[in-house]
Length: 516
Image (cartoon, rainbow, N blue to C red; front, side):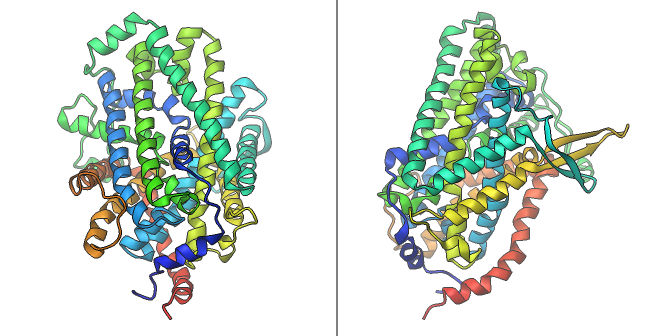
């Protein structure tokens, strides 16, 4: 084994302080709870504008679900081979090299996990503001301070509530994985019941016969699709501006771009692998939790969108105020009270989602630190067997992301502020897809490199399923690179910035894990 490749035994030796308290039900709840945040209640509006049809909305979610399940089935083989804290970081390290594992962990910490936690936290605060108007994005504690021409930093009451939520859940998870999983089970059960309630109301109570007739009688009729243009002037020289009505290529691009929202809403299913050292039976339950969790969420998401189509005509979904499709659906049933009911459901959903993300996310920098590829202090477990230092570090970085703003000056000199985490949504999807493709390909790579390794679970329909995932996900990546260049390339830059950082850390890691 090369000296810079940490042996798998190191991971198992260093994991002795973890508490194995997560069972199959708990693991499935972590997957379901981490996946369901606020996206399912919002992104349908953007998807219908891009695909232009009710059938396009449903097909987008079905395609996302099939991709996610295919990835989960492929990851299961790797989870059984490497049942250690760090999950996907370990899989990439073992399939390729420590560099690829580090690049994933680096991107996860900077953007993927932390950016998602920040987005969910601000979503929590935004919907809390529906119930408590004092939680306002325009009530400043610290007014925006310019950081150059394009960025700023600020602290509004809304931002403060998001930060307090993150720090509270960070503290709770330092008290032990048993408390963390209990909170996860409670809030995941509550949000699942709330989503089932929304589905029941939309399908069986709304009785909007006009919407049902309009949407399902004209399932594939493309109406009012938005134009999708190449992401840069260079690409505009040889790629057309298209819509979903522009023929086969237009549909291909529209569905690829639409995956941004649905894939973001379906992400974080892999987080259970990060906590493998705390599962009672990791060789079995990581894989089963991934598969069961993705199946449950896929079914819920498709049914939720059927409920939207039963409650609202397509035009109302496309033009829902602030893209709050679920709120519009409940308002169609309950009137003004629908907005309050939906706000309460999203508050519960985002709280449970962030608990799972915070619980799992800190295990990756812990694993990196044990390989000598991150700050040494993160290797510490506290008296309750959790990586408290890594949890705190993660919470502080997320808080910084929440405070960072985008700054736009219009032609008249008026300044408007956005949230940096909003841009991170697109960055996250692009970066996540890159690593998902590499990890699924790692199943094939390891079959060749380690044909005799123990595999408690083997990928279903191997090699067809992994290859299908790689081809389809790579096609989506190409669409995003050409048609969402302005948000795709920063994801690539963030990944590549990890290379010089890795070179700084690698000598220390190589010395630490050198064979005797």
